[in-house]
Length: 248
Image (cartoon, rainbow, N blue to C red):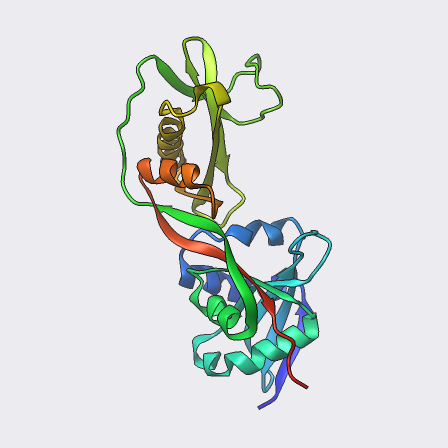
């Protein structure tokens, strides 16, 4: 068996990447890395047959290429995953793997080849719809004359003439997903506004034909509780591990 690894442009593996996204069927956090030119892609061949691809980017600096974040093989060739991965790592010289735990294939490589792995973030998918009401609160699009103090969020919650929370939808993820973000003004926290704006952003996403998703840092229990109260459920974790040095 002859394994060949070669760097290639995104168009050269686009069909394989479409299969990767279709197979996994979840919001892929690093999708925008390809759109913004933050990643390099590599094509895998076995005995001159196209069998998969891998992608690398910089874990701390966008200009670096030290982290494998995509690794895909067509199903008939997955029995050769370890061999292909080792060849890929030697060519791209990556020292880290970043994976979503719901990406079972790359997560398997992380646990097989990494040490000191850990979870950086919690990933959420929508589970059920809520119907919270906030008397006197209005969810609306941001106006140009709203006092936002540097916050460029597209949506706000206004209560008693004051903006108490803001947020929006990030649409640079794989279609149909939209990533929800939000924040509550410090003086108005623990009053239910965070849950309310997440609920309304979810509704907005669906009206746009998008599927809402979200994530938060692994230790942010307040955000996790807010997202779960608004109808999200944990669907995975953002994992990171240092690749062990391969034996000579």
